[in-house]
Image 1 (cartoon, rainbow, N blue to C red):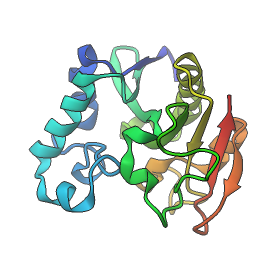
Image 2: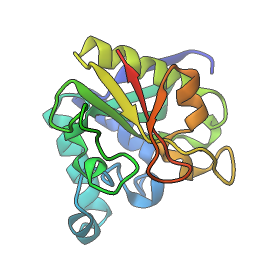
Image 3: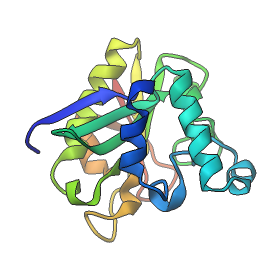
Length: 192
């Protein structure tokens, strides 16, 4: 994409985040709370409650992810940070369950749990660019490794179901599979 810029999502960028997610909150109104809140609590919240939860998290800092801009327009989001910041991502029996050598409470173990792209920006290599920026961001903030649990295949290459990212994108970026508890959803890792 031309004129791509990627920045940590700080409180001064909340308006850009909400513009990207739109009035419905992206991904069926999730507002990127799927891995942040227990299912019962998340289901009890309406769209405004999920939005308010995420906006409070952004305001509290540190940045819970990165925003990508095509010129002045926010076009992409990647949730990245310490595993402890996305507690539901760490639950037992998930494809993303932590391994003993990378516990969820280790602040040096980071996770990339979600992506969201403006529909017109999908399929243009944005995830590759965001992943590279995420690795640099994690390294600069003391991460010793980054993990993700992407998807091998989606019905369509521009599918919203790829919110976890594509396995091939992670492998091209130097991540290696370290576990596979669910077919098509490996746990991949990059040691920094």
